[in-house]
Figure 1: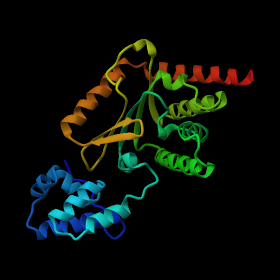
Figure 2: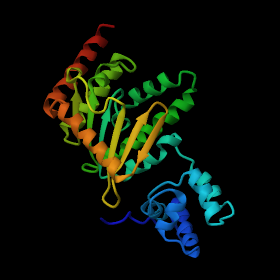
Figure 3: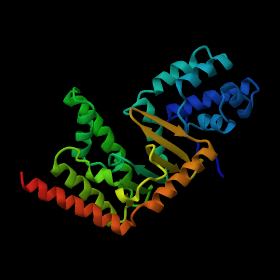
Figure 4: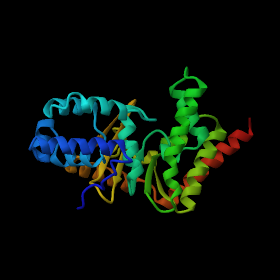
Length: 280
């Protein structure tokens, strides 16, 4: 399998940080495996940091400063690179999402960010941040809609989503908001831009009852799994662990409705919301 695609240090601050890491590692006569052992990560992960395809975390930066006698270089530059439109727990996952050739996601509660309409996203953020200013909500919504621009490409990434039926039934915002949100998903399905299945309530227990799951595959790097929680998230790259979560996703798909039946259900629920909105 080819290694991660190298970014240009002249145009990518993260790649510049990676290039400095490579320089200092080689000056210390350490292999990637040697440095990985000292940092408690794999040698491959060191390679991804050096190529700029993975984000350096602050605890890693502090350890590297100590191991490589870098006089705070990695701490200073890692802090500068931490600035992101997204929460710390999701920033690296968002960057990986933008590079992925294939994304598979199980959504247990909310329409995934890549598929949200502006009104739905605004209702989500307003529900979670009831005292936030309108300006803050605007920033969050804009960042979420910007993520969705990866779907402007007609073919890449391939996006396959399994929505729990609760995603359809839980009213986020008004009935109008929900109807438009579900119609948006239906249009993307009809345009053959995405694959969507619904995991119905009558499927009973299933393999992903613990929470949301996103799997990402790349043309130039190993796959990743992202586990989503309340104000927290975990990006995983261990091959065995990712393979386990791939099986979890496959089991969810096996319990879900077919794409055709799922589309019919999504459109039916959207119609129910539209009728409800007309009554008020």
